[in-house]
Length: 354
Ligand code: G6P
Image (tube, rainbow, N blue to C red; front, top):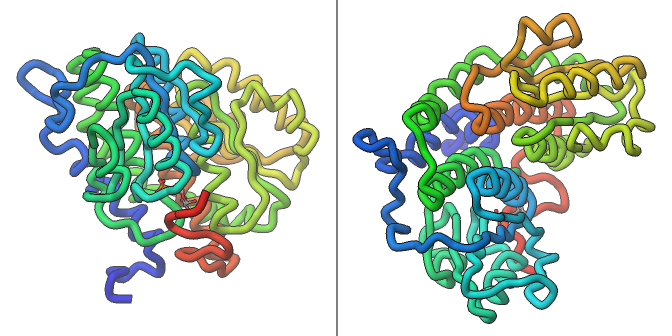
């Protein structure tokens, strides 16, 4: 218990460690002089023709986020479930950079995908938390996310640090950066702290703990976080939860929406805002409680039952902040249900079988 520093669970401690973890992840990387991002370990990395991310679980959601960022910055990038990666069926060659995103560096599926990629001549890079892990040793290059040890089985701070690291990686590889982006990265830590200080997630969890299921929806950069929000809820509360890109709601999942299924729309003041409002109306008219996670509180409040606020940031960094609110909701639901939060049934911190 000493290691929990007064928190009831490692998971809660690790959620609260995120502002520090992000500062560590950024240390020495964004440069003030020329507004670039330098990752010392990767200095001689050539610009690849294409990028494949291979990962599992939460790390896969970070990879989905990263692939969008790379595509927007001009390098074709795709996220694959490591267990589904197939070097025979898709072009993988010397011009391909295969990035294994794995906090532990020991996930068997991810290691297998990296080994396959290496065999066909692709360049390999591990983005990991564990120095000297198998992924770190076996790949051509390694970028550490520096989140510090994570004991809770459900990934929390490592997800935040993966996203921040991958955001920096995309700037470093594509050479696209700006003073605004660097400033936004640097502000993340304090913004996370303000969410942790002010969140009403505990009250929301209390109110909706008896629900049948929880749905999380988002578009663009916020879509992977919708998936991650649902995964976290499933892992630690054992409640049914699903995450979707919001546009997919009407193609099936909407049939499950009732007054007993709270929906968490993740929306920011960006190009997807109006479409997200349309999605909120779709679920509201089916009686679902709406708990919006947003930086546009004034605009969204009249449409939602509750709002979980996030500070304004660069539109490419909003998922890092939104996820903190979703982690807290899952944690407090699981806590009310008295679940084994740090060691959920049937799950392991690192899965070393394929
Ligand atoms: C396990 C953990 C998940 C984690 C996944 C990938 O299933 O329970 O929390 O996201 O492995 O782990 P990795 O260490 O490769 O990021």
